[in-house]
Amino acid sequence: MPFKRVPQVFSASVKEVAIGTGDRAVTLGGENVLPLYGFDAPLKNPPRVGVEFSDHGPDLSIPGIAAFYAGATLPAEAAKRACEMPGVDFVSLVLDRADPNGEDRPVEDCVALCKEVAEAVNLPLVIQGSKNTEKDAKLFEKIAEALQGQNVLLMSAKEENHKGIAVAAVMAYGQKIGAESSVDINLAKQLNVLISQLGVGGENVVMNLGSAAAGYGFEYVASTMERVKGAALAQNDTMLQLPIITPVAADAWSVKEALASEEDFPDWGPAEQRGIAMEISTAAAALAAGANAVILRHPESVETVAKLISELM
Image 1 (cartoon, rainbow, N blue to C red):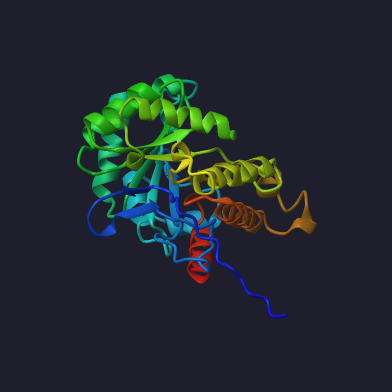
Image 2: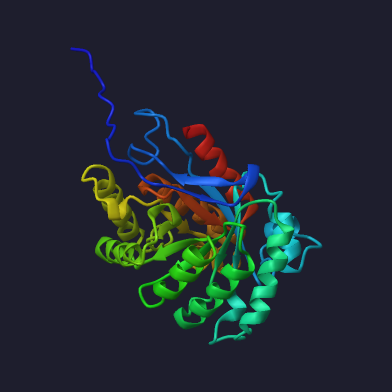
C-alpha cells in the first residue's frame, strides 16, 4: 500500500514582527507549520541570521574574526563591516561595557555609541544590553528615544524591568522589544501576558526563551521551544504566538570545546574550528526547535547557517 503523506498545516500562526526600515527590513515569524516544515506549506518568512559584536569591538583573539574585521576596531566601524558579511540579515550590538559590575559606562555614552552604530549600518539593528536589569531599563529608554524611527529591536525586557522598557521603547518611540525568560514555557507566557496588559501588541514583541551550547543543557532549550511552538500552533495560544530569537554566540564560544587550546587537547583539532562547529551546531538545533532568528559571531558560522536555511527553503 503506497504511503500518502498528509501535510500538517495549522489554522493558527505565529505573529509577524518586522525590524529595520526600507528595503533591508526583515520580518520574523508568520509561519503556520512546525519549524522548517516548508514541505507542508510555504514558510511566509524564512529564519534569519544575525551577527553580534561587542562595544569593546570585534573579538580579535579569534583569527577568522580578526581577519574579517581587520582595520575596523571601533564598534561603528565593525558594524559597517558586519553588514558586508555573507549571509547576514541583521546586526546586533552588545553593550558589555555598560555592565555596572564591569566598566559601568554611563548611559549617555552608550546612547551616543548606539547612534554611531545605527548611522553606520544599512541592515536592521538589534541591541543587546548589559545583562543588568536595572541598568538596561535606563539604557533602553534613552536608546529608544535616540533611535526613534529606525525600528530597532531592544533585547531584552525581563519580568523585573519590562514595564519601563515596553512603554518607552514600543509605545513612546515605536521600537520592538525582546521578551526574555529563562527556559520555561510558563515564565515565557507570563511575561508575554504582562507585556500585553500594558497595551503592547504582539507585532512589537519577539521572545528570547534562553539558550545553551549544544551538549550543555540544550535539551531544555529545545524542549521549551518545541512546547511553545506546539502551544502556539496546535492549541492556538495567542500569548505564545510570537517569533523566537536565540542569541547563540555567547554560549557557543564560552564552553571548553571552543576555549581549550590545541596544545592541551591536540586530538581535538584547532580551537577556532571547534568554536565554529559548536556555534553552527547550536544554531542549527535552535532553528530545528523553533527559533525564527539566531545571532552568531563568526563569519564562517553566519555563512554556513544562512546556506543551511537557504537549502531547506
